[in-house]
Image (cartoon, rainbow, N blue to C red; front, side, top):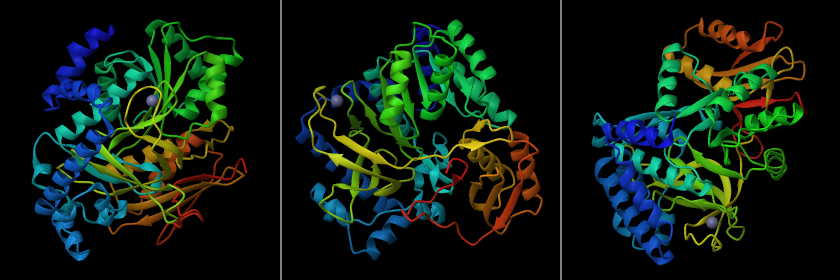
Length: 447
Ligand SMILES: [Zn+2]
């Protein structure tokens, strides 16, 4: 589809109907990226003060949290005062969902977002239309650095929902947003060949998706002496660590620049890479801190505060990744602050009985579907041993049904093959790694 048609006929009207004025915020973000640093800091302080005040007045959770920690919104006079406010964890969101949400969360225009994430625990966030519009606007503004605009045809390397209802829903979303999807759960030379042919008809302007899947597709092209259609001008990778080796490999085969994206389901885009290779932080929609135990290193656990989400305020929320912030100036001329060295988001690849790689997100989708239908699982972890057998650890909730184990096994077997053995373990808690991270999917196959 032509990108102008996609943008004006589908994308903007559909977001506008949901109360999201994406075009207005996009105009703002295009200017904001060149603001003076002092003005950006003033904007951020003002946004945080409004947010903290609102949360204190409208969320029982924050009122109690701040009272117990003897802090008050009036204490936030300068940005540096913000570090005195307590942090909020994923566990807090799960356990205090009903008291974190505010009166704004009952509007018909809010969106519920559930993220599986790498934490082993699904988190549901409610976002108001304005927050979602800002999230989309900063993302599109940043894609413009890669030469992409709203409606540009996209080849998407991503998961495909497992239920038919959700598959239909996503087909419609793909149509509206002008993209063709390659299933990260169906990787084989055959499926790559079909997608390759589809791309030559569809002529996307960019590739978008999981680092590992794009890398495998690029390897397929190289091994078979195939090239991307000349319409493709850039590649945007996301969700997994992009190593220098992978970046170089993708660049060498395709001749294209790779732009990395970093974000999380709860707030959306956190940082995007510019033409000069720096990861710029979305300073107009969030405040990012790296909380360090060792103050000198500058690297620490990332805390994010979403300026615009008044339905379910996230203030000093622990993202679960470590990174370093930088005060460097970027030669691209943008004044947005810079995120350096992100640690985390390392996925292990799983294998089916024929040794075909399976993207670990597949497992997340299976558990997500169980959660949406019968529920009863609080936390889970999947470990694949060298003999390909899988150990599934489950932390049950009260409403866990005995047949869920069979349902899970059947779903996983349909993907991994009858030859793979499944052992279920019921545990009180999922143990963290020595690094402190909770890893949801682990594999010993390549160790
Ligand atoms: Zn830059």
